[in-house]
Image (cartoon, rainbow, N blue to C red):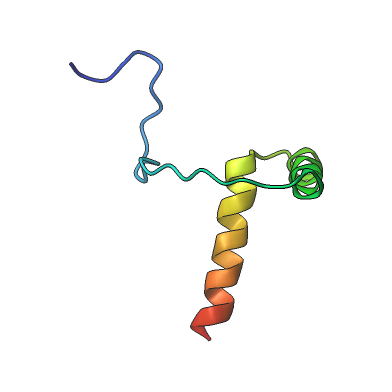
Length: 58
C-alpha cells in the first residue's frame, strides 16, 4: 500500500488513540488553553501527562 500523499513523516509516530469523556467546564478550559498556546488539544493533553509523570517520578 505505501505511504499516502500528504502523510507527515515523523520519528515519533502517534499510533495510539485514547478517548476521554469530559464535562463542559473541562472542555472550556481545554479550548482556552489551545487558543492561548496555539497548539492542539492532543498537545495540551500530552503536556499535562508529561507534567504529571515528572511529578510522580521524583
